[in-house]
Amino acid sequence: MQNKELKQGIHDSIPIILGYLPLGVAFGVLANQVGMSIIQATMMSVLCFTGAGQYIALGVMQVGGAVFTIIVANALVNLRYLLFSTSLVPYLKGQVPTPIGTLLSYGLTDETYAVAMNRYQDHPPTASYMAALNICSHLGWITSTLLGAILGSFIGDTDRLGLNFTLPAMYICLLVFIVNRKSDVIVALASALLCLLIGYLLPATMGNMFNIIIATVIAASLGVFISERD
Image 1 (tube, rainbow, N blue to C red):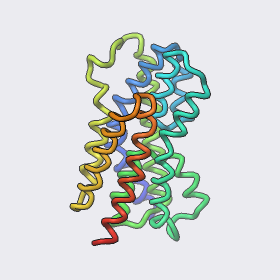
Image 2: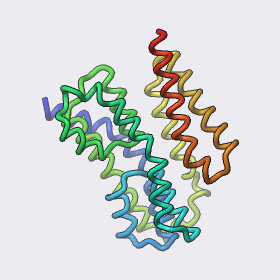
Image 3: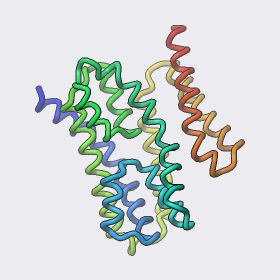
């Protein structure tokens, strides 16, 4: 049973790894451009498994910002994982021991969360599946970062390669996989519109940090309301 779950977790991580490849390479290239060494860029991906947060860190470093600014910005942007992990509790409770689930939650990202939630609709969660999915995804991110850091001096401008659209494209694909009901479409559209509206109304620095959090809370509340009405 454990071997089957491990294999399934590895199998389900493959699309995530393929999505991480251009993102990690782009991150490694940009890290090289702001003055980080290959080891520093790679270790950042080892210790901080958060692509959006790492890109924010590079942006702050590029303009000479303080380390405190990087920490605060990452804390705000990654608050969404508090909501993600909370929504997993009903699935993990009684299936995965709390200490193990807590340890494995380090590998929780937007992508691993979407894939795991899609599987949990029909299969009970197991520690073996979570470990395989999260660890393989993380290794994919680390490897792609290392590759990008090595190739950084040769690639140059990543925008001309279209890598800047890779992250939105991957999120769109993940969204399509988990949208099964009319209510899912309503919540997805509501969150997208809220992000755009907040980003338009607030200054760029504030909007980039708060729009995802605010839109997630409101859209999640809308989803609960719709579910209770059904």
